[in-house]
Image (spheres, rainbow, N blue to C red):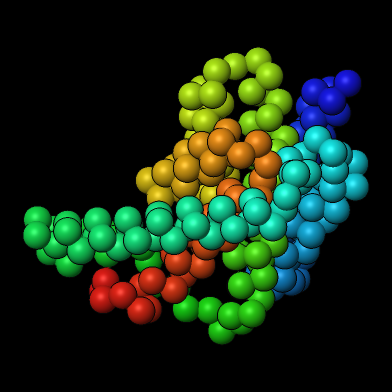
Length: 203
């Protein structure tokens, strides 16, 4: 059954991720390259074993991607507008308290790991597998909340930015029932978190 395949793969990916995190302390490899390697292995496992039930299938992938860009543009405009409006009450705006300027010498590797491959694998796992499996048993609001908490906690600490992102990605998956629109939004959000501190007067 599809739900059984999802559950087995959820457990398998969790074991795989635990193994990669444990091995990271024993491998002499750049952390970005190692992260990219781990995500590529996880992506191959998910797509190879459960392509039909991981949210990658959609009636029109180009349409889903276009919707993802539209949602990303709307959300990005909302965030920048809210930051500018918040400067009436908070010196420098709220974003300067939420975002951290991160400089990476290996920008291409960071782009691949954090803005292209990483978000895709996270959407396959958290929304395509975990959310879809939970949604067969629970209400949408509970699935969005639980997967958002798990998603945010996976990033090392429970930050407001990651939690809001998880809620938004879950809502988009509930709306579209495929990972593509949420993936584009996720990738754009990660790119924005990296670039905005350099192009927007936050600091």
